[in-house]
Length: 198
Image (tube, helix red, strand yellow):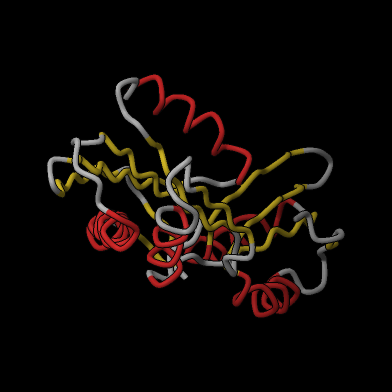
């Protein structure tokens, strides 16, 4: 799955109704209320602020709302587009300014779908890569060799210099076992691993 790396705004017009699609990264479903509150304030003249969100490594957490549009004519279509995009950690909101012409249920579904598609097709994204964190101590004389080895795989690093060096190290999960084995080789066993620090 992929995750968005930017916030994007796209707009379409259908029979004088404006549909403004906003796509952005979120790390938790809990963020949605504040974002929608902000959008309502920013678009105080809008009639609806519909949303759909997918969060989690496998997209296991979802949220969507029709925001007083007829049932399943707004939030559900936006959600279906987001789900089909294979993006996660994404919130897509569609702000609607009513243009005076009723669109009917089919027209609403089509318009909200189109607004969401504009967002998901244009938003920049990156591959979601699972990471793991390990913690270990090693003697000072092994430090330089270890750092040279770890550098290409590094996603995060914290170092404490005490009687021995304690390193908290984050890497892609797929490299973890290989890294542990190689660290044992490089240090000739003079390394102590702690429980994974995830």
